[in-house]
Amino acid sequence: MGNVSLIVMEQGGAWPGRVGDSENVVAVHDDSEALLHRTLQKLELLRRRGQHPRIAVLACNAETDRASVARRARVAHELLRAVAGVAFGRLLLSTANGASLQLRHELLALANALTSSRTLAGTAATVTVRFGDFESAR
Image (cartoon, rainbow, N blue to C red; front, side, top):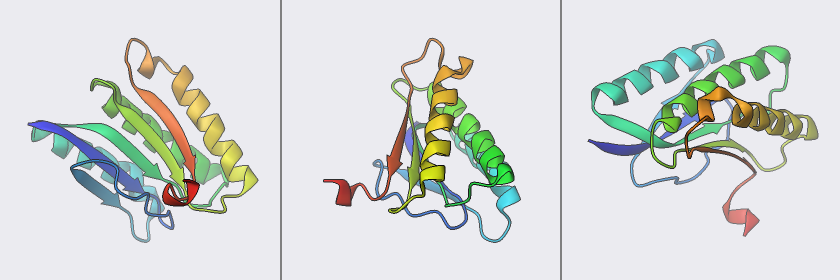
């Protein structure tokens, strides 16, 4: 049925702006533990509809504790798996303006780990990181 963009928002994450022609959003309210489960549910729903995410965005919050970093990595891995099956799929890890140095380091390390993973082997998918608002970067 077609390609879509999927935006996954961590609680407290900044809206990344428009990323494609068609968007679906997974938002979590008070329970950050539910993010992976809700993301997997949305990916399954899209798959059943015959839709495939070509662009996935993980809008990250400022948390850098061990549990948040691990949870973020699990969600990012699932999003990467979803876009890797589509020609020229793209995963974007996004933060708000003023991201801490620790968060920047964590996201760059995550992008490096995802890029080195077997999930990307034989695909044209990419992983990118954006710090802050795209509009203000111009």
